[in-house]
Image (spheres, rainbow, N blue to C red):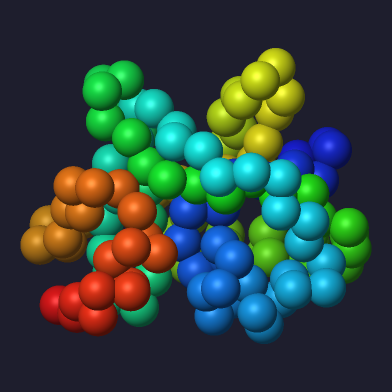
Length: 127
């Protein structure tokens, strides 16, 4: 977990998405929405995953949060690790943020070229 309880969420934990409402509306303090360089975003249908690319021209949209409730933070950490994500950190404005990623894309998963899960869900697209 991130030592300062700061996280970069790019999928269902972003504001207005289902897991944000379920876990965090009272425990998350949204700091800002940013583009993180060097990532691809993929759809697993109900939720996304990000993979590091090494190509700084590829970006994903993420929302930076401070989690005010450590028990919620621990529950989120356990949930993410239980479904094949691994924990890593990204830097933004000299601060470190926890992020949950996949090692590599899975065959057949859909690449979201625009890198924005909220935009994808608002268009009503499904696969």
